[in-house]
Amino acid sequence: MTQTITSERPYEASQDKDSPNRNLTPITTVLDDRDRLVVGGCNLSDLANRYGTPLYVLDEQTLRQTCRAYRDALKQHYSGPSLAVYASKANSSLVMSNIAASEGLGLDAVSAGELLTALRGGMPGERMVLHGNNKSDDELLLAYNNGVTVVVDNQHDLDRLEALVPQGSAPARLMLRFTPGIECHTHEYIRTGHLDSKFGFDPDQLEPVLRALVGQPWAQLTGLHAHIGSQIFELEPHRDLAAVMADALKLARGLGHPVEDLNVGGGLGIRYVESDDPPSIDRWVQVVAEAVTEACGARGLELPRLMCEPGRSLVATAGVTLYAVGSRKTIPGIRTYVAIDGGMSDNPRPITYQSLYTCCLADRPLAEAEETVNLVGKHCESGDVLLKDLPLPRTSGGDIVAVFATGAYNASMSSNYNRIPRPAAVLVNDGSAELVQKREQPDDLLRYDVLPERFNAVR
Image (cartoon, rainbow, N blue to C red; front, top):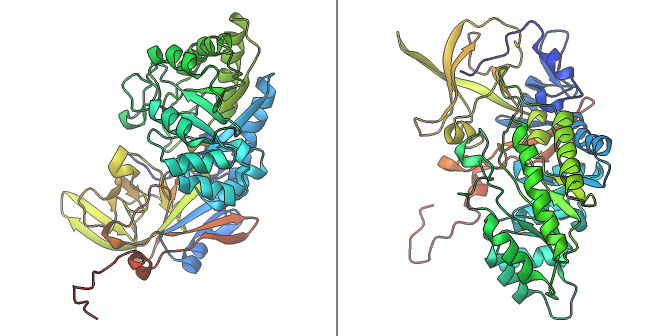
């Protein structure tokens, strides 16, 4: 069951700056002199009034803190070179790309759109990787022409690259992805390390593919990649992964490939509700670094550059989504529905993954709960329920609801279902709010519609 914040000082949990991914709220969250929520020095209800709702709010200090947590933990726990690579599918934007680049991180993309966003946001191509199980020729060429390492996922990638790389030109930098056969306790849709997955070469394909790439003038295999899933709290699977990848590294180097990068993916979970108990970023990195070091040492291998791909754990807790309360429906003895002005189009995770969140009223975060409601969206869909069985103070129309840990996969998975425009997004820092994503308008949704001339338009 999803719960609201009910502790006496809930915002104080956000001050654990050594473990940003364990927080329920951004690290800058405080109360003002009227006990209203403030993030990044900005009053949340004031932001809602100024920019409208729904509204995505991103806290810059939390974003930078999580970037530094990964960067610094890798330096502390791993004696070889390292690079944290932001998994931009979590939240792809110019500002996120710029922040990640300025903090010394790399970035992974899975489409031409994410590649262009990162490049124009200031991310150097040489610090980027391109993922995807069905890359187009345009995507492969965009990556190649900008020095982006291509994570080859299947034979199709190899065949297309061989045809696309001009003869006599520099070879494409490749990272080979394979499935390690490791399963984790997470939602079935976000498990990617087990054998029955659309991603990566099967383990028994690894050696034949590595042998086939030996001496190919168009290809330079510089890395290996494996990923076991998302929203993971367990540590043991990452230890298992290190051993599997070290075996692959020994095989690749033994065949003469100059493999210098070992990319263990990401997947560290975050705290959406109080009962969630993920390891800290530092602890996760420590376990991964020690496991890779031990596995390579046992096989007599020189340490590779250790890469990881945090997405959710880097951006989720920096985000808060604001909604305005609208209509109410009470069915005596059964349920009360409280509707907000957003829902499954700006946050599809509850209807897709049955995801849980924590929320409160922005201007009354410490108020006692007076009723249990279903917080529902405005879409024409019975399943458009944002939070079920939610204890809340009595609400009135216009009250602002703040939902926490929405920085990951909300904006990036948003849609125009029911032709509802996507929300605006603001970045907050030291009392300043800056627009980083304009709010769509209804007219924007018609920009790419075409009415054939034989139809009579009604004006």
